[in-house]
Amino acid sequence: MLEVKNVSLHYGAAIALRQVSLQAAVGEVTCLLGRNGVGKTSMLRAITGAHAVSAGTIQWNGQDITRLPSYERARRGIAWVPQGRDVFPLLTVRENLETGYAVLPRGQRRMPDDIFDLFPILKSMLGRRGGDLSGGQQQQLAIARALVTRPKLLVLDEPTEGIQPSIIKDIGKVISLLRGRGEMAILLVEQYFDFAHELAQRIAVMDRGDIVLSGRREALDEADVRRRLSV
Image (cartoon, rainbow, N blue to C red; front, side):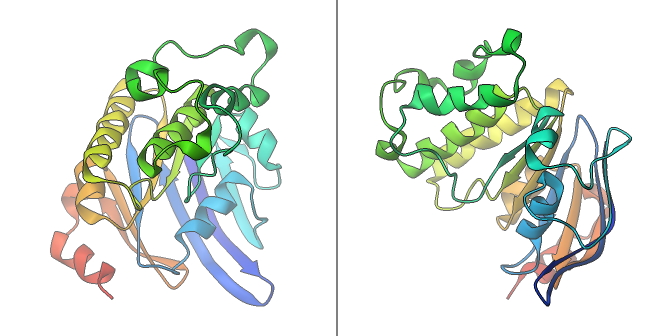
């Protein structure tokens, strides 16, 4: 279980998060929705250690990780697929995947057996450079690289952004499969409501640095959620 409790985050004098609380459980997809600029990515930066919080606590599996650096959180099973993918353009697909070994003990530094079952297109592209892949292929590579670390919490920042519909469908199937295994918590940040609503068990909606609506998917009024996402 991930537990974010009363977390605030500042960029200088600007407030990005205002005493935000959130939970994400193993075996479930928790989706964080909201318009641009409301604090969704800042929440992920707080969880993954990319930016220090100003107040509040973050717990993972009952342990306080609020002040741990990013690499220590990665070693504890937290993997982040950032917005924009951030693949290494001059490294091959294989080399990009192998960067995930950095957080693993030496005895575990091998490719998980199911990576190419989940993303078969990557198997035929192992020798190609990351920068030569299409946007959708780079997104699949970024998710696969995160899975190489064998995460227990997978954090995805808008994986559908700029991706063609067929690959969005493939990514949705992968997230659904990972959820069904019951081995990890998945925290998904999205603006694409239909994609999120189909996958998530829990939904939280952000506005102006705070969570203004949250609960089980079936308990929330769909029209109300959509209204809060409209510009």
